[in-house]
Image 1 (spheres, rainbow, N blue to C red):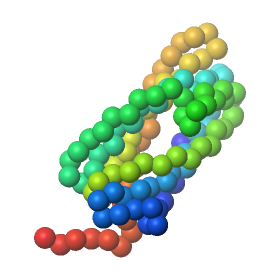
Image 2: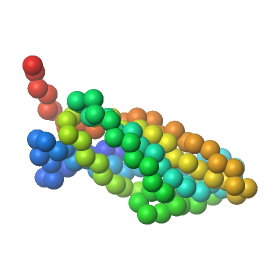
Image 3: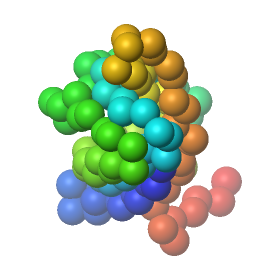
Image 4: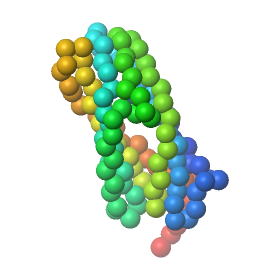
Length: 117
């Protein structure tokens, strides 16, 4: 899994920071998997956590054969940076067995911006 994050300065305000992210999911197994659902835990610099659950990703429930990949992009907002986002995907194999695939946490930060208190 590969994640690329970008701060969207033109869509952000000091009270609401907007980030886009692109995720590339790769199936390194010898089985076909379907991405059924996702769970995100989004934490901002004030310690506020938001949990988000939903079916699939960006309106799709992609099926990935062995060696297959799926790439999608989305966005997230946080009140204060730096923030962090991580969670898991719920995947299902051809026999109906389900498993959780962790999404390692990644940073939501504005490059070059620091406030000293």
